Every structure is written in C-alpha cells, then in structure tokens.
Length: 381
Ligand SMILES: Cc1ncc(COP(=O)(O)O)c(C=O)c1O
Image 1 (spheres, rainbow, N blue to C red):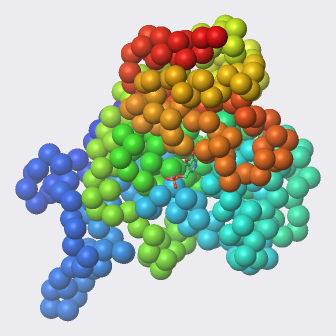
Image 2: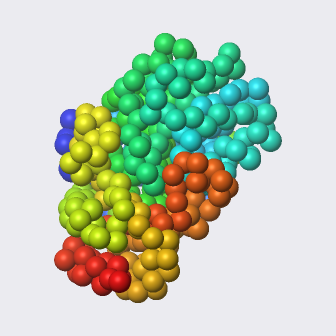
C-alpha cells in the first residue's frame, strides 16, 4: 500500500488488508512468541519482541497515515512517549508545554530528572519564549497542539523551523487530532506520537501507543530501543487497534460534528462562563489551528460560572461516561482537575487556568440532540 492513496482509503486498507497465506479478510492474530528458524536460519520473523505480523499491520498503518518511514506500536501512549524520549540521554535538556497532559507532565517532571534529563515547561504558543528557553544542553522540544484541556494552539511550522535552526529534535503528541486532521511530519516535526487508546482505537477497550518518523536514522534508533526495551503492543491489542483505525474517519467526523453543536450551545448557556474549542468563531488560535489542521476535533472544554455547579452536573448527567479518557464511540466527560490533570499540583493548575469549574467533553457518535438534552438537563438550575 502506498501513501498515494487518500487517507480514508488508507485507514481501511492500511499497509496490509488481508492474510497473504489464506486470503482471509482480516490479518490473523499471531500469538506466537517465537518462530521456527529453518535449518537454524531466521526468516522474516524470529522472535515476537522484534516483530510480529499483527503488530506490523498497525506499525505500517501509522507510518503510512502520518507519512513516516516506519511505525512503532507500544502497549500504551505513555510507553510511546517514554520510548521516544529514550532518544535523550543524561545531561540533556528538554522543552515542553506548560499545560501538558498530566501523565506526560508526571513523566517529564519526575522520571526523566532521575535519568539526568531536565525539562523546562514553557508557553510553547510563544515562539520567543521557546527560543529563550533553549540552553546549550537543550536537545528536544516536546509538543501537544491543541493543548489539553485549554486548547492553546502552537505554531508547528514555526517551532519546527526554530528547532531545525538550533539542531533540536521535535516530538508532537498528536492524540487529539489523529493523522486524519493533522499531519505533523508534513509540517516539519520529527516524531509523531499517539495515545492510540483514544481516537485511533476508538472504543475504550484498548490501551496502546504509536509513534512514527520520516527520518530513517531516528527510525533506526526507535527500532533499536523498541526491541531492546521490549515495550511492544501485544498481537491481540494490535488486532483491536487495526480494527479501530478502519472506522476512524466515520467516528471522528461524527464526533466532531457533535462537538461543534455542543460547543455552540454551551457558549450560549447561562451557566457556562467559557467554552474552549477551536471550531468556535473568534476562538484564540483558530486561524493558526486551521492553517495546520483539517478540523477542530471532537473534544471541547467548558467552564461553569460557579464552582457549586460541578457536583450537580457530575451527579445528573446520564449519557456520557465520567472518566479520564477521550476518543471513544461513547461521549466521555472528564473533570480535568481531579482526573486527567490530577498529577499536576493544584497551584500549577490554577496558574495555568485549569480550574475546578472546568469540564472536558469528548463527543462520541451518539445523536448530538440526545447529548444536548442530557447536558442541558444536568446544567439546569
Ligand atoms: C494527550 C495524551 N497523551 C498521552 C496520553 C497517555 O496515553 P495512555 O493512557 O494510552 O498511556 C493521554 C492519556 O489520556 C493523553 O490524553
């Protein structure tokens, strides 16, 4: 399969769309941990940590979808992030967004320092602030855009150009957009990373991570670490992920439509102070977002005017599951303060504008009118 096919087609057919041995319409789950070495010589596969046909399918898929030379599948998004950051070594310095996803913040602020790698958390939407944070030992810039949960938009082309000029590696967590809406490697980013647990898997039944790069030398180093460290996606989970990827376009487009409707109605609701969604007219960063992405996505946040409204909202709302995740076929409502961003100290959250009154919604594929009826009832005085 080649990248000349359009994304919707690639999502369905991926790198391989049938079993070469039998013609079966689905690549089988190969649970084998090892492979026969005929006359003592390894064939295409020798041991499952180094390679497995089920995993190859999703690794080829992410490389094709993002325009990478090779893809890597991990057992979680955090394993993908940690494995990509293993390209750094003791003494290196890293720049990351000040409003990073809580789990990534925890990894960068606690685990990496133990390995002698220091991270500075800066407002990456400000190119001058990023340039000012570069030190002689800076080796990489880690990004998320839109940021989560406040949807700050970072100029990917601008950061990529600055990083190239200064010889820095760039990594982007593309979980919120997926390759359907944003293709970071085309914009000059070195490594695209996903928590495939979210939209790519799409059914809240799987934990997985993916990474890809267009640079053969970076791919070689990621491949070496993947096998050496062994954080590889299992064959069964690879099958589930491949199946989820096939319907990404339908799911994400439906969720995005619902998110737009909810964002506009929430904005007009008397209990709501503010809505964060790049699809809204006049939203800060909207033009920049649409200069590098093809859609606003299916996640939005809103802030209630009053703190006392949060508990009744969480008690009354019926349709969404209330949970720290996103990207499922079902709508997921997250109280970021206590869930997705619990790992960030309260004072830092307050400084960043992540308030206790903030709620995030990942819109699923339900009828948006039902979602609105449910939310409106839960928000009633
Ligand atoms: C933006 C983002 N990146 C990474 C992760 C971590 O992914 P996982 O839970 O698959 O390890 C998450 C999880 O919520 C996330 O939202």
